[in-house]
Image (cartoon, rainbow, N blue to C red; front, side, top):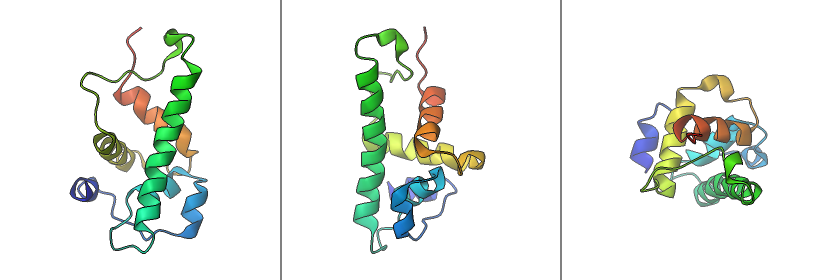
Length: 119
């Protein structure tokens, strides 16, 4: 996964404790692209994946009673967690205009662009 992250144009950043507050998409990207040599690598990667998966699970819970409200529809076979993370990081590298936005907004901007539901 690290090779695909580095090839996106986003270099691994040193993780700062401030990044864990995820006030911006840049903070989340810093966590998601942490280098294995970073002292906070394990925490950063787990936080990154937990944040992204948690937001997506919340969306799934919100649309459970009305699937027509679904914003994201994955193809079959669904991408793995690592594949989806790599796609998100690559997408973010192409959209620096969203780096100061709230991370959950940027996550769903990506998901709805990459995996829209055809209604």
